[in-house]
Image (cartoon, rainbow, N blue to C red):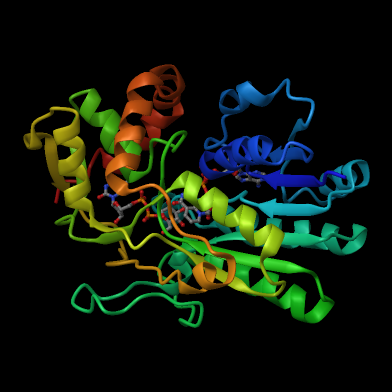
Length: 343
Ligand code: NAD
Ligand code: DAU
């Protein structure tokens, strides 16, 4: 018999890609998407699956204990995958409070419901940012699951707090949990506040491309579908109580990504504008994915050259998705963040 899987944050970037992945690859399962629809959640993303009989969308805040309990009573989920989060580092620097509420309190509300109603698996979608950063001059160093938690931003601290709570619920209450810590994702439906979609959209509009500092910071980029496959494997075959790092050994400097986007869109590099650096900016992230490879056979399948071209093509062909997003509230955010940011 198929399982009922609650996917929180399924109207966001990775959550929506995961909803599509699950409906396609597990056709006996029922996917219940719970999402508050913050500025980052977009119901139009889920339009292609709204009529699917194996899919249900519920507008709900993961901090709403009563609402979450009621949903568990209605759906009796077998598995919960928690993507719901405030996810943007720059916004967390501007205002940490909502990060603590959603990312920490929201996680505890979900896990309390799992304890109350019983669950086969609770999976926490976490981030490599909980490990802090690595120095640029030590390319031999990588984050393993044993790397100490050492956070830099309110965002990463809130995610680390949630991780610790998830592992504590396992040890204290025996809740069957798993945690994945993934590197930077890219692909379709990525919200335009993040580096890659922001640069693609600004370049298309012949707008300045705001690179923080010198652009030498390194991120380890993974195509979103590869992340979704990793979570699928972990919830089905991963060991309860374990943390799995997910990343593709694909380290790139920000400036090189921006130049690559200019080249792919045939735009001049003179659009690149160096702006004031992010406060507390992490230098380098790099994941060692040996554990998930050895235990679950996971490997990334999409090469960066292919993934970035697919992503650029997607933004070229889906202006109807991003154009409404970048008007209105996003304009005010952009003005706040970049309006007065000369180096
Ligand atoms: P996103 O910001 O695109 O989407 C977040 C979604 O969560 C949105 O649909 C939003 O409406 C929803 N949400 C926010 N607060 C909520 C609340 N209180 N209740 C219910 N729903 C709420 O984020 P994303 O980039 O898709 O990231 C998803 C998860 O993956 C996050 O937990 C993030 O920390 C983690 N992660 C992201 C990356 C990355 O590169 N984007 C990498 C590793 C881990
Ligand atoms: O590593 C996983 C994390 O990756 C996730 O946990 C976060 O949710 C996700 O947002 C992402 O965090 P980053 O801070 O690495 O992503 P962002 O796209 O914001 O920035 C990537 C790099 O690009 C970072 O070094 C800052 C830089 N940057 C970003 C923006 C938005 C710029 O230079 N200019 C910009 O305008």
